[in-house]
Image 1: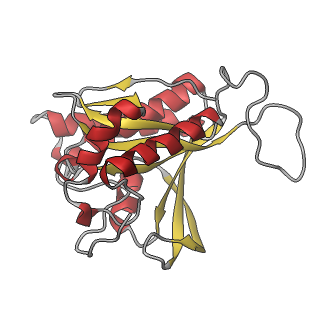
Image 2: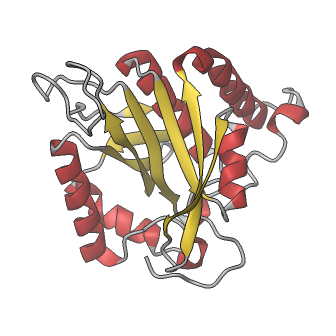
Length: 246
């Protein structure tokens, strides 16, 4: 399984999700639940504890690595994100390919490909640039520490704001899988898929770093960072829609 790790940036700190984050997670999720429509968000302390327990079980099985998203300025928990769909390519080639965990000691194994998802932020943290820097930290760790070949991302095809945010990162659209699964609202949803490959990472990193610089420096070119800090770019946002219980 991937080893728990803390990723630290200027505005955000990603801490491996544990029970100590439960109260903060519950408080963050309770701020304004009308902003959550596409990602399951815990409700109340019991929901947060269950959310964390599931994440810890997935970590032990080598399936995902979940984080508490913590605002660096004051240590406040403002949401969560994770690596998931971890894919390990070691061992003999078999056909047809089957889902497989790590070969050898799972405590030291690292994935060859992964997905970033299950991201949500509290209402007051949305549009502050925290999400963009969190993605930079995760992508840098995946490509430069794990050495993955691919990072994937996905969004409900209806979630145009999230899809635009993923594309602003420099991810490449791979298409829309029609009638892919049932959404949280019970409607059969189509899913838009995106990816970043290892050879594309240096250029993508430059794009994200320029966007962050543009948002924090008045002298940076406005065209690079236009809109950053104002948009809600989390995967779970559905503006103007009624509450969907998560």
